[in-house]
Length: 151
Image (cartoon, helix red, strand yellow):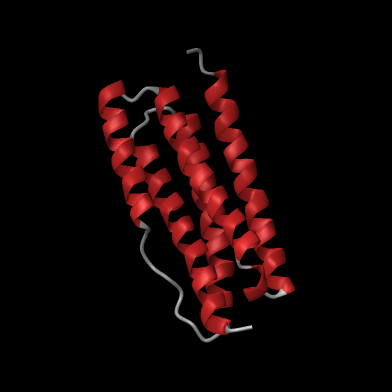
């Protein structure tokens, strides 16, 4: 197993968590509703936890943990800006945007587990699967809340 490829995979996951943190910071700014602010803070905490574990693993492998966000994350945040401006900070629209961001995060983890398994140790796979489970739970919370909002 080559550390370089493993570090690349782990850094991709760090970046998607950075996207989530920034996306939920933006979403929190776009709503006045306290329950959403609380939910978004919880989701950011999930990503900070994941990033802590991922960064420690990258460092253990002799790499430098990634910083910043992906272009897709920037597009997500810009889209949130436009959507919020057009909808007057509509709860359903904000939750729709958040669900889109959650889909991107889930897909990134699923691709790592499917396409890069040969570059990950059993322990790393277990860690990534645990993170994925947390992200799926967050996705399902957003989806449920969105579905409860009357159209």
